[in-house]
Image (cartoon, rainbow, N blue to C red; front, side, top):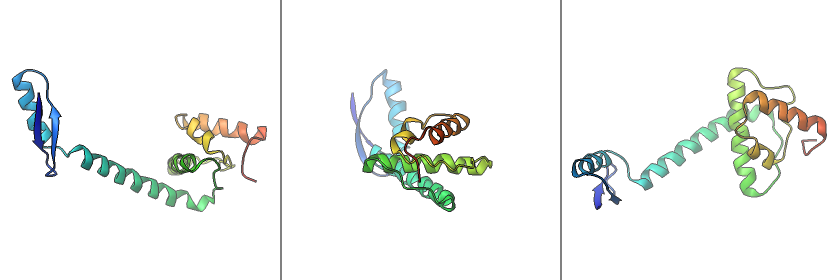
Length: 134
């Protein structure tokens, strides 16, 4: 059953509420305490942008080379690289070669590796002669 809900942010949104009547009432009551989808997404994006900016400031002294790839790949990979290196810097474990890998696709493909595995893979790249900083 569709129901118009006025969220905590003041916006109205139509929600499909299923289940028994008491379940629908509970869900509607809970939805009134939350932000609408648009406000939730905007807040999430703002939070992600703030974290990304903070990570970029932390890794700025490393003087990292520009990544290569499509504009979207470079934007995403820059965020991934900054987040990973920022976390490693916080732990005091940034490797000496400073991740000279400049292929944006490589950073995207390896974004889920552990720090140790990422360092090992980057070391393989550095010795194999694949795209890296000069």
